[in-house]
Image (tube, rainbow, N blue to C red):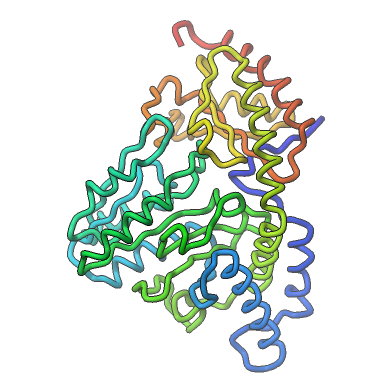
Length: 391
């Protein structure tokens, strides 16, 4: 059976060059980077090199890069660490209503503890935050604005640079600075991530979305941004993230970033063309609708709602044909829960249950897209026949 993996927004395979770079640090160069002997310093040198690679990519200082286990940990460290460091009663946080669960749940936790008050920004029908809406809700107590760079479900690219410019302007007249964070996980290999251009103080991402292994992430922390570490122990990562460094994975992330820099322009162009082809073909199926912004969108994501079917059922049938995709709906306790992203965009529940996301990789081929769009219409037709009347 032909196999086509179109769920790269969920995770990507480790690039062979990344794996090759990692291998020596499992056995030959296995030292603990905190030790002063040769083996330890060999590991330290590798970490420093990877830190420099990430810093050059983001246009920042190497001392502003904190290695974590994933973007979720980076987000927790950024939000909880900042609020705790400022230790202000009822600090005010502003986030978009379409954030990843890592941001949403972290902010809910802070609210539950009585440490913060959270404002959830609305989005338009494309999932876009309006810069004017950010300005409206900033208060004297506001300490943090957190808006994702590219949405993981629909791919919409948020106006991060414009929001960053607004916050910089506002901060000129304030005693308490408003700090700005972006979850760049879905944009890191496709978009301009220079932190000064974006105007961010904190930026997070994961390695496993850019062909590095699962279990490694990054938090960019602008110098002077207050932060209390959330993981106590040793003095690793500038005393902000205790624990023996995962040297092989850090090396892998550095190599993955190097490959992003090398291939970004070509990959973006090729994936944009393949995505547009996929979108055009899927929209030929009656009752399908593109979700997210039609043009201001990450090049690897094509998302739809399909009338008259359940997204989970489509995924199972696609899997039977060897195709991996995803849905914004999640099966919980036997009930299909609609995507919070699609709900925020104003898509009715009966349509959001039919959500479908294809996400491409740098190795996706035109033949794989052709195969996916060839089998999809028959699956949708079959499931519509099986659906109860009136659905």
